[in-house]
Length: 506
Image: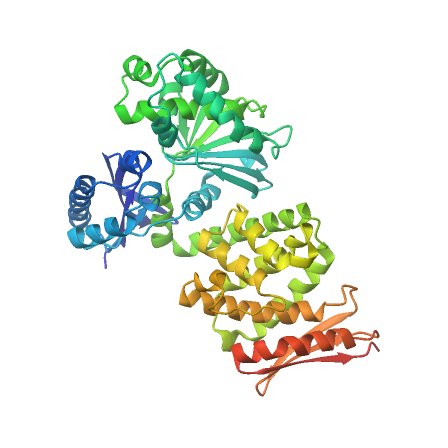
């Protein structure tokens, strides 16, 4: 039996990529890496949609990639499309035409999912010394994402739609002599917002994105162990040489292609601004894409799942930090979390959900009351909107909507197809929201007194009945009343009764 071989086709905003790899030891071996320049992002950012001429060219390139993958004996072909396809007004037509002309279904990743792929693999590549304190800057064609890396975990992330290619499209009519100054002025308003969350001293600056290899080659970066190190002095000198030049002047002096010159200057402006917050004498570039992560997921699933688990822990820590920012009672959250996860685990044979859904329940518990920061009276609705507005590394947009919906319906208002927030979810996600919401409602009821009333808690499932027993010497009549009021919805979802009992402390 031969080695498993996997191919990944990436449809980025300025090029299409093919990567073919096979499993080798505890890593992967790259067999082929091809790219074909095609600026779909220009269509999307300038006209709002991708032309049929560009769609036909995309299909032609993909068919060539498919043939190459077959020649290498690839067992599977994975696909991922990002900003240009995702934001195109005619996205559905694009996907339909690609399917008809190539036979492939394109998987369109939202911005969060794309960054999650990159960050997950980044944890496997970065040396330990860069994991303790760093700012991670990902400049895509359509957006920039800035994250804080502390003690091997991403604790804060912010994404803004001001990527390199998008900026070039916005300022293509600006005169040569004004281009750099106008871009700097435009970026200032966004970077000022992000800088409010940056600590005073950052040990490392880490760059990811499609432009890092280009910048590295311009600044004399040195590659080692899967990362590229760029001397700060070399970067600064190159930035000073280029900051007042127009894109066309850069292209001529550095012998760059049209696509390369469009993204270089915005990248340099952003990286230079972030660099001033670090004392590092080097920038660390991680030249990986979402496609690299997909290869690892397919070829080294056990190791990749371990990396994903670490990333989930990072997301939980980030959620705790967000809850603290909104002045939540962390002891109360911990009590609800313990109860909710115990109920989830006992119901495993009934709900049939995975560890990932358990993680989403945990995230929901941590964030379900953040809306009280605005107004306790309408906190369910406020929580829904706050959660949807948060950027949390480790969850994608669909999962964020699920968490927000659970927060919205954990009180007296129940999930109902007549509510737009519930109706806009897929049928599968509506069921998931109801299952997790039913559990959260019981856990909240158990802790409705907000006083840490019990010494211990026990959950049992027997003979079609879920029994939650509190070990306490205190009165729990309020908790029993609240628990009983939540039981009807729980029974509707799971088909079993739930009861709350008390056992006195001995």
